[in-house]
Image 1 (cartoon, rainbow over the protein chains, first blue to last red):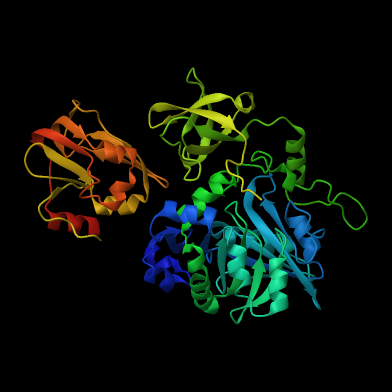
Image 2 (tube, rainbow over the protein chains, first blue to last red; image 1 turned 90 degrees about the horizontal axis):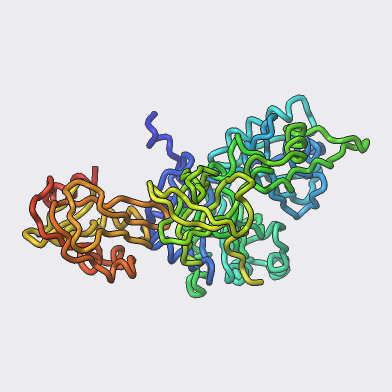
Length: 386
Length: 123
């Protein structure tokens, strides 16, 4: 089978084509890269709202009376401590502590069969995460794993006008109030333009916003309703290009760039997601995959650390470019970089040695043979006003 | 794809140029669309000599960066400073206001007609 035939289409593919999107192959999916101007899409999310198709993301359901305990042993986070209706950013690590994927886990209201968790994985890692969870759940009859990635569509509405747009499309007044009252990293089921949706206040842009999980076949109806309601308020459809520049400004890691199997959560400055204090029902330390190496990593001085770099010239550092000192010594590698549409100068994230990681340190990046000056700055580059 | 002006010549590297000398050089609508929003142009200085087929500049968008190849040999006699100041004109009007430089031509590299270039860009 050729690569083209293997490429999966989003349930919203026809909408993207009708909108004139430039499509790109991303993790085995054909997804919109941009609809028109990617900078205009980026700016719309910062100032009004953007509508994203994220149907390529993986949706793995973990349910049953033992679901929380099974996830506590499989992931680095503490999921039994997660209250129904709330969500957590967490990771799944290999036995050596390397990151297999970063995840958002939503806990829904329990049902008669026990607890219900929705694990959202990156498209490129769904198969790895599914296989790792299946292996880690093996032998348990108190937890069920179901991959509903292909039957689930995910659309995100992100930006300062997102609440107004999404709340206005909720059918029932009390559910609309519940959506409006949602805290960051919380979710609630609601009927939206006649569609049973899970509405979550999560995102990957640094703005307020919502993500809506809906049955794939109903995604076009939802998409068109959001466009119709949002367009007068400045909402535009936004592609993966804007998604990447938005998350970079917000200092959020991208698997494959800042995170991979050779990286621990601590390397990426995300050691806080590793809950070494997890305990079992008897109060004994809970064994979870990667625990020993991650405990050792947490207690030792890091060999490298993730920093933000502000470009002081106009040429942007890009993924893979070497970070150098004034004398030309290589002290790190850029993981992500681009001209920041919001800030007007290049920004980058990079792994560097600890000696050069202090805020204000002047370094350079080898941009195709020329050293461009950069300065270590705190992450994120952009933080919205609240 | 935007219509390709039939009176221009094209290169495999997605540049266009006018006949004669000095020749006006730019990038095609195909290249501009593939790059996305262009935010930075690095062009040679006026008076610099350029060789056909060599890298003479960079075109940077939010998403990627692309090298600019000279379709001709000769001396740069003018650069589009308006496009350097506001590279969005290259996206908006790649065959017009978004031209990049003018070169006093001494030699010409391999060129394509609009029809040949369209076939190349489609393939």
